[in-house]
Length: 387
Image 1 (cartoon, rainbow, N blue to C red):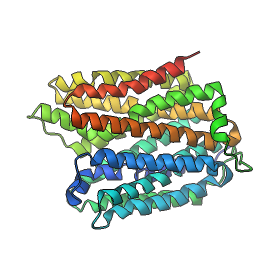
Image 2 (cartoon, one colour):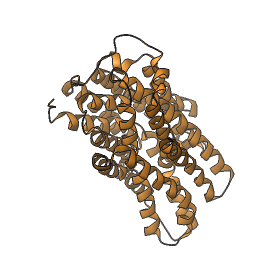
Image 3 (cartoon, rainbow, N blue to C red):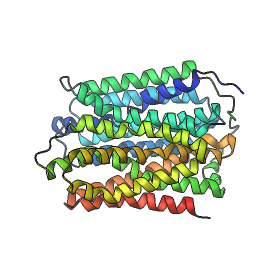
């Protein structure tokens, strides 16, 4: 069955544009702290608010099987426009931590209609080569996630609000592109009715469970690493006082490089299989978690940045392959809900990880605390290797 050549590029561009909403608050976190008199722990709270909103949104979308019962492109566009609106709400004056948390929560809620629904649209179009297609798609997510850090650097001479105007505009464009140019895919199997039991019944499949639990281990590490990238750079410059990093630019590079590894991983998956790619990347990222305290102590800032870039590559490259394994082991008419509920649980885990690490980091002045991130890769590896 032939697919129009423009479909995948449109999905990728739309995903990139819309996921720029994700770390828009992180990219301007210092400005939010200064302008609204927030405490230093605001980074963890605002990041977790987006994640909690995403979890709530994915639960809502999954319980009501929205991505399976309604045209996915319309769901994507509707979510993108509302997410852009709430993201832009950060520019309003006289904000408090509470109002900022609500706005970030609502942005995260509607990201639930963007990221997993975008993957659902891809699975509706691509049966063979799904791992490669999702590699491009998650690569777009990575670039979108990293973009606010780059915008912060580029727009340094402008108001911090320009980052929010830019990301919200991109999200609106991405949503409109999807609904205008991506009709329902040839492999779409629409759900006929509301079935709340799907969220539980999908886990009866053993291979689905293994893929899902591997993904959960991966998520323990991923977003906490992304959230703390600027902190990891600052730790090194504080330890080696002669070093001065351009933190926004390097943060963008360390996160964005993961888009390349996602694409490479997609091509490798066609040769050695999605499971093998996921296992390899999970192992390598777990090793990075353990080696981080030693990397801080060595004296070469170039080696340190290269270490973080490598970590940024392997920490995300397994994500599209886990999504491929989840989609391949779900009933076709339930793929949208299956992807959404797995995303929901995975992002719930990120909140726990971010909050635990934030609390310990502010309480204990010891770089070894970052080895806590290795818990996820270890448990994920055990799940995938279980017979």
